[in-house]
Image (tube, rainbow, N blue to C red; front, side):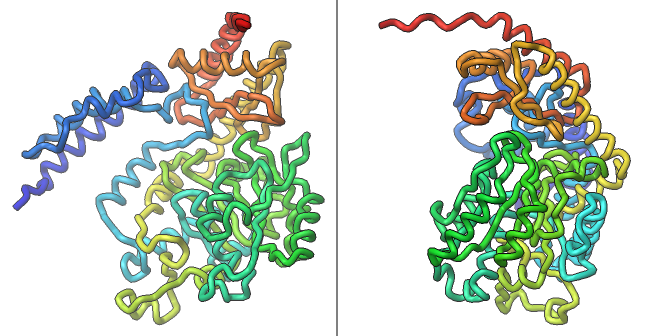
Length: 482
């Protein structure tokens, strides 16, 4: 019989783990943001197999220090400016700890009533906090659910859109006609992945050109594509509009896209994975203009709202349509509460059957920070990014490549790509900060995304000084040999 951890052993080990996390956070500024070791270093340092006899937690924590932490990219580091933020926070970690300790499987209301009801209420809270249209509230036909990521939200929206476009036949017959999904050329890769998973293939996605100035979807091009497909016998099923694209945080014009979708009966999903968090601040809700046309909407609290991965908030205007598309009810899941029709079974709102108690970490975050604390966090990030953009704008060597409505700044050295590529590599090699890149109008562009919880003006100023000095020290590439 295995020697299970006793309550007192768990208490002692738990204190040690919390101390380890606390020390990790405290020492982040002294660590290089990214691992300096070559691929395979961690794997080579691990033993060939698990221990025959159990080891104390102290041994595991020692190897965390020795083997694991040096091999990480530290997403909570104050010098982490890559991709988009993946925030966590003390309250979020504690909420996850409680969720793990409870070990609830919330697939049905009956398997965890509080797990379901807390999530429903929290998604209504969030809808109010973001100023979302009333049609997404659970008091009406709509409601919210926590997905693992915006990619899953896009997949679910795709499946519901196919169900609607097929007049309900999709549930039984599958993809029996040619259907089309539309998104801008700047949309997230999850749109194509969802279409492939749903059986439409990459050819089932039509990418719509963007306005060269704003990088946002062209409504005229969308209308032309839908009309051309209909004329060719293709069924327009879904439009994915983006509020805050991954490359530049461009905002697709929902007030123009929405009526086109309504006119042609096309399901409209709005992906605000990153930028949606900004809407906790009333002055940053400009991207939500026209959201009343949307059939579904999502954003990631795990990006910019201090809630650890994974936590995507996904709302639909018609929950009945969603459940009809996805529900499968074998005998072993039947129960009186489900049969009554008086409860929500979130298993019908997602791809997997099982689900963790994700709402707890969101509840802890909302309770700890409050509305004003969350707004302070978002506004602080926007202000820091604006200050960095001012530094770029004032330096004639550099140019801003796109607007910065949120907390991402896209910039580059004027001229060819080569110096920009070398600048990015040199800056990241210092281990002091970490940036990523994109291509805007074909040009190599650096991205600085503010959002790590410990980032302050001092770190953003240091980032600019490092970038500026590194740019000055770049030597021209050697001439090519003939």
